[in-house]
Image: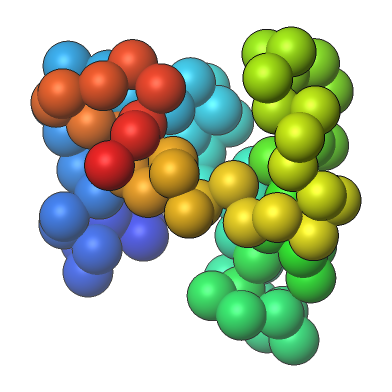
Amino acid sequence: MACLRCHTDKQGPFVFEHGSSLVEGCTTCHDPHGSPNRRQLIFQSTADLCHSCHATVPGFHIRFRPDTQCTNCHSAIHASNLSPYFLK
């Protein structure tokens, strides 16, 4: 993957890897050819991006507002060696 030549910190192997990056690659979430969104994401809202694949979430997530940033808790979103849920 061309992205990993520069972004080597995102390259595994990791114990827990984000499945979409393994199967579909970086462009599942990122538009490397000029997205107007922060970090070249395909959605303006991080929550919208996450929910585009993760339509169902655990019941306790109901307390969060639609504008809550998933990455506040799921900070290691690309991969983790510690948490299968990519938590801090």
